Picture: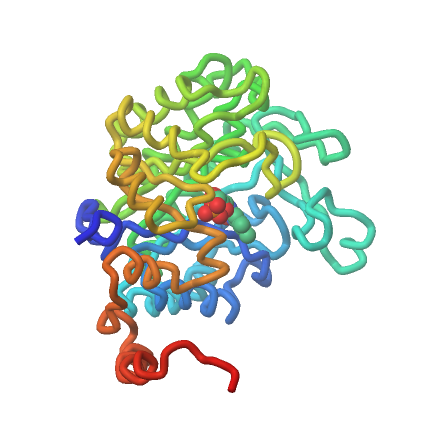
Length: 381
Ligand SMILES: Cc1cc2nc3c(=O)[nH]c(=O)nc-3n(C[C@H](O)[C@H](O)[C@H](O)COP(=O)(O)O)c2cc1C
């Protein structure tokens, strides 16, 4: 058994392999409610063999959506719309996960395909009206973007409760993993970073102050989510901007998360400024964020997930074998090929394990295999 294909147990939850489809916003919800698109999107990853699939950033309150198309979990009705998706994923042997988030000052934006910037007149004409956005300090994410309102303490307390309530609803809807979005410049990340948090109350200032709100959320969610189910936190391991968070800062934060009982740190980077989804950064190489997962795993002593331009199963395997991470997230490559986990299995073991495919497909494909062997590659006659 290769390490990529080996099961992994966290608390009472066992993933069938180490392959995770990370959260990827679809901007296709209506009033925060999941649609048939979401069933297909997440269902096909479950059918494709991933161990864990984490649903896209799902807002714990309406103003925490990036766009009008984001998923939400701020009411029982929202959770009810998600429950069949979680149930289907679980029926396929895939652990259903969900990312809980609040977009903060990166809320109220255009869907990427309409421009990926602040809402403009054309968006308004489509009915996508802007709303009041919230942040640690009244500093826009970039020139030309909306200026957020600085959250007061009552607002912070309200959102701690909203995250905890979101976690309770997620558990009730059948999700076995929640991931907290503390990366990419969204609300909790923006509290962590000195570039966006200029507060001088208990929720700003030094690292302990800037971490206070995110850690309170982590504590509340850990308490609200069932004790036998894991909680992940996604961080930007570095802001990648002058004066922003460094890897050392975030190793310190990961140590605090471990103390709270967080199970996995999902190591992304960047996004503190600029548009909602197009993170800026230097030219990227395969596995460019793996060194962050490695350092945090070693220095904070907490399991990590590596993510970012990991497209080859042999590379994924190497990252695990080198001890750089415990889980491998494969995002866009799974958009291209939802069967990536099954192909990884074939590549790494030398044979397609048809028995591990959904029987609706595997039975037929196993029966056809001998025919294809006999015929060889198709040739024009
Ligand atoms: C369409 C799309 C939507 C995304 N939405 C989210 C999201 O909701 N939450 C998040 O933390 N990251 C999000 N990301 C980032 C991915 O989770 C992942 O970190 C990134 O795509 C890099 O991994 P990859 O090279 O394997 O795709 C998104 C990426 C894409 C392509």
